[in-house]
Length: 222
Image (cartoon, rainbow, N blue to C red; front, side, top):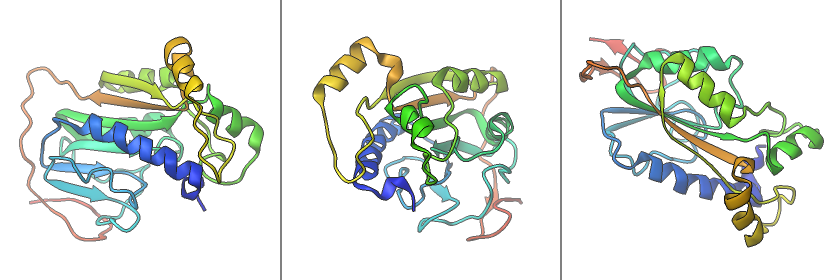
């Protein structure tokens, strides 16, 4: 069972949805991919035409996050809600995203910040349940890796400064938010990064593919 099924986890997901919806504003195109958390349709309001998911009740293609099966320059946007906590090789994963995303396309990453209440719980809790049994990547390190593979950073934001130790109750302390946002901005539990594949002189073209529901190979060039 995932921690996100708890009362506290569900509340945090609701907050993340609002952040992602704002990040998706004014993003257009033909193909958007949501990795993981497919039981939550983060792409529901996206203006991108076709939405692809690889797990959960909205699953319509089948693949592993560590081996994205998309053609080069074929995806307008890839959304990664807590995907970094699951992949085995960060650099390889980000390189795969860069290869698949079209010029001027976007990568959106949502992940836990190790320097936060969430990070403290992950280190001290010794819980064998996602996400507390995974390794968290810091905002700075994540941005550095994203830039190294070729993306530019459009936006990076930390949020949610609440303690995350009571799973069955939502406790909101406004003081933590005001103090954290103003004086400790790098200690938010969650960060969201919007990165762009900015390739000078390149004009994205609509790829021609066929998709097969729950097929092993997601894309076939026609």
